[in-house]
Amino acid sequence: MKALWNNQVIAESNQTIVVENNHYFPKESVKAEFLKSSDTHTTCPWKGLASYYTLEVDGQQNKDAAWYYPEPKEAAAQIKNYVAFWKGVKVTE
Image 1: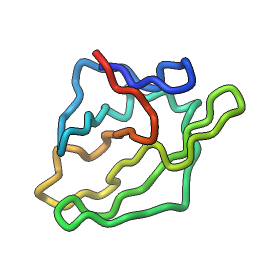
Image 2: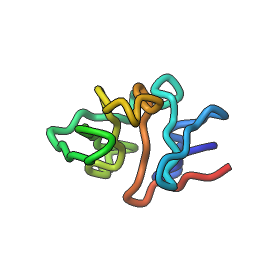
Image 3: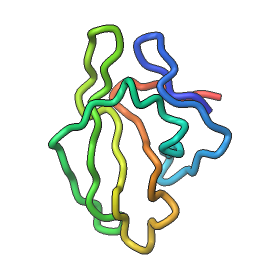
Image 4: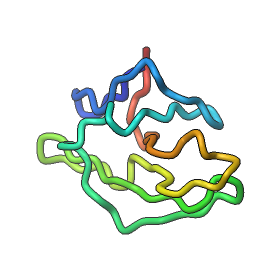
């Protein structure tokens, strides 16, 4: 699977985990140079506290377009150290 935004491959892996129709990419498969830390957090009742990244590619930003669970609840333990995308990021094979 590939995650694409602004004509760049943001992440690429054959080891994604699908949760609620979202592909979670292993953190090491995500190109860190495109990630900027965000102060945004949300809470999922069964996954826990989510943190976000803003994508930055060629001077353009996509605020909070990637999220991850640094310390997921037990029910979502399999997505620890994985990152998912939305807000116009195309996930394709």
